[in-house]
Length: 218
Image (cartoon, rainbow, N blue to C red; front, side, top):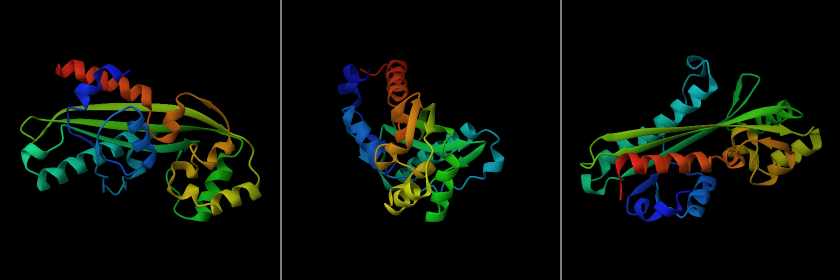
């Protein structure tokens, strides 16, 4: 979808505000050229302040994007500021409980057993900032929000133990990586499978094309 617009996008300085290798890989596959500046936002928003999980994940992505913008504004000259900053956050939600990255192996085991045999929602929010021409402010702010339903098969304790010991769950929302060994836990997916990896590709591309048209970039 963004293929006809790659030359325009790649004429811009783009920053990905994430250290996720999965997001990097997906943007690479789209043909985008970008710099990686991971956000250092602590992701410590109080969940009680957000009755809806989608508000919570959206606000986290906004904070990530704006933290990187503010940091680069202090570090760089205006002519070295990015034109576009892309940030994202992914959470797993089940029975109104938000599951982020496990805090320990025991937490990972507990999370996976909670998800066993059930359907949960994977939410990814993306914030896209367009920096003003003078490099001093945000000109445009766009948002992407995607929900995918994932159903796990029934997991036994041996499988969960071995999976946790592999180390893969420890930096993944919900304690599993669909793009890795965790794919064997998944019985079915309803929605964007790339969203489960952390970047809803189709929705992102639609938003970028709309942005190009809105700003009349040529």
